[in-house]
Amino acid sequence: MTPFLKWAGGKRWFTQRYSHLLPKQYRRYIEPFLGSGSVFFHLQPQQALLGDSNPDVISAFQGMKEDWAQVRSQLEDHQRLHSDAHYYAVRSQVPDDRTGQAARMIYLNRACFNGIYRVNRKGVFNVPRGTRDTIVFGDDDFQEKAQLLQRAEIWLADFETLIDNAGDGDLVFADPPYTVRHNLNGFVKYNEKLFAWSDQERLAYALFRAHARGAKIVCTNANHSSVRELYADRGFILLDVSRFSPISASADSRRLFEELVIISDPPGRGPK
Ligand SMILES: C[S@@+](CC[C@H](N)C(=O)[O-])C[C@H]1O[C@@H](n2cnc3c(N)ncnc32)[C@H](O)[C@@H]1O
Image 1 (tube, rainbow, N blue to C red):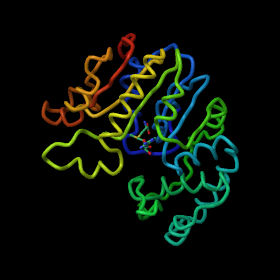
Image 2: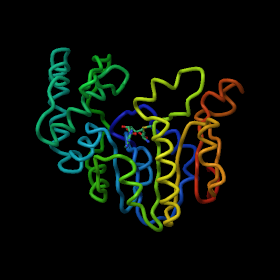
Image 3: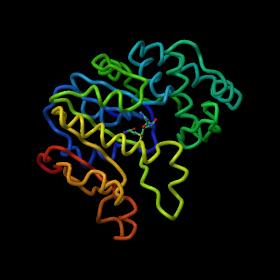
């Protein structure tokens, strides 16, 4: 099952190539940086706790869980009315009801420039209209997704609240924004506002506590020395993974796309 949102940093590539790094047995699945929820839709767990600090993401999931048919019908209305005027009118106003909010988020996500999510200082979505005109896809299986979401609690919350909820046998899959410790080239500065290095440290400590309570941990992160140091000597396995096939990329460009996976349990069998 694939996500209904397109999300920067989405982990579909991870589910396609590295699903053997995800434990097969666990009690409850916990995903504190939900985004489009690629790993949740891939695993289809029996019981889940999902969260994100982005209210638009959370209302999209909650609306889908509450009444997928209403979301779909409103999305079809957006498809029919789709134009510059309609796009900017929808962008400027957040409906009061959950399903309206969900349909708005999915519409903007599909119609905006490159599927980017960006808000202004007041937290209002401000991405211009993109070139795509298809809003409802033939393979939009909202009913199946809504059925799966019936098994999930969905929280608008900071990641620490969810991770602190993890207990013995639960699986925490954490996919934070990739921030690294301050260095001299300055490119990290922009990230600082979104997810500071202190948040990375807060995340690591929350994961250490959850692990000590018996939770299984899988965390994707930037493959950077600062992140490696943070998780070193804590009983975790650190693995380099590449988003692209090693055969199709040169050694130099490959490094750019390397990411780090931090796991608490030895992986099962490799990819089929
Ligand atoms: C890299 S994306 C996750 C992508 C997701 N794994 C997927 O496949 O689509 C990171 C997410 O973390 C969320 N986020 C950022 N700061 C957060 C915080 N302090 N607590 C919870 N979520 C946060 C963002 O809103 C974003 O959706």
